[in-house]
Image (cartoon, rainbow, N blue to C red; front, side, top):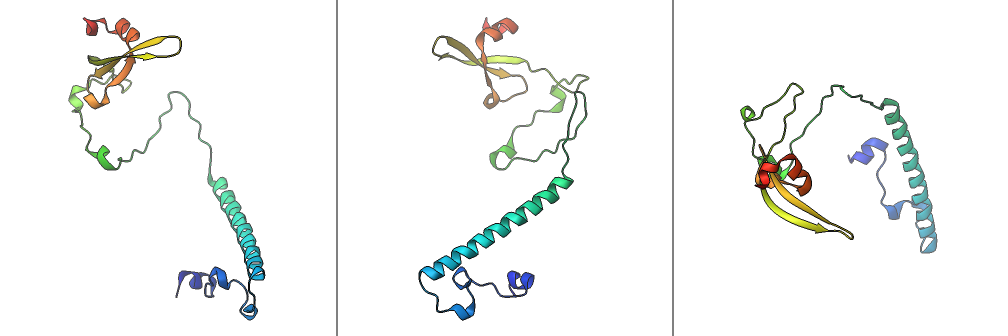
Length: 154
C-alpha cells in the first residue's frame, strides 16, 4: 500500500486524472481549466495547513531575552568538511583569567598593504597572534597596532 493510500484511504491520482472518472471525455481547454481549478483548491488548502502549523508553533515558541552577566549554554556542532581537522592548541599554553577569557598577543607582522579609498589611504598590517595559526592571521589598522604594540615595528 502506498503512503498516500494508507493516509487517505484511496489511491493517488496523477494531475491528469484529477477530474472524475466519468468525465473522461474532457479534452483541451476544459481539461486545462478544471486542472487550474484543482490547483487553486490545493494552494488554498496548503495555505490553511501552513497557517495551522504556524499557530501551533507560535503557541510553543517564546522569546528569550538575556541581560549582561547572564549565563547561557551554547550548543556547538562540528563543522563538515576540512573544518574538522583544525589544529588544537594545548590548554596549558593559554592563560585564562577569572572571567574565563584570555588576551590575544600579537607575535609578528606577516604582511603590509595600503588600501586606497576615495579621499584617503589606509595602511594595514597582517598580524599573527599568539595561539593562532598563520591561516588565522588578521588584517589590522597599522596606526592602531603601532600605538598598542610598538615593539613589533622595530
